[in-house]
Length: 94
Image 1 (spheres, rainbow, N blue to C red):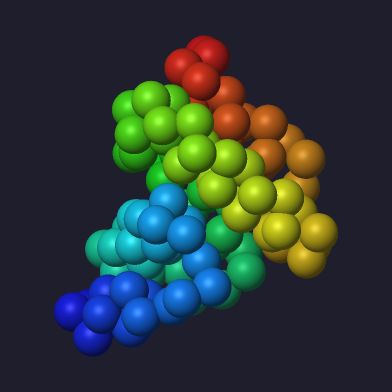
Image 2 (cartoon, rainbow, N blue to C red; image 1 turned 180 degrees about the vertical axis):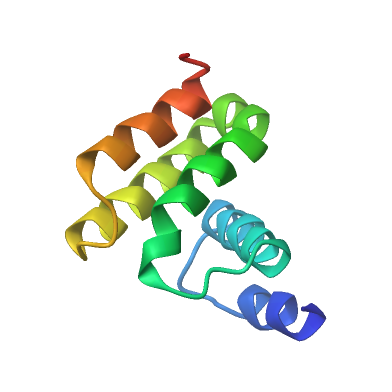
């Protein structure tokens, strides 16, 4: 895990907020591994709940999460409901 963190820090073409988001996501999937595409939707929702405070307080970090969700949507790994419910979790909507 340390090696992975060091490798991410060496990227020069991403900003610090993007690196911070990548660290958060990688740490999350390190603790709660995703072994297949079917596990990505619940991982997104639980990640949003787990990091709700950080994502809601830092607009740039939230934007990274939004872009991440949209990328997963474009790849067909999550559907519109997952995008909406994950963002609702970040925004504190019940």
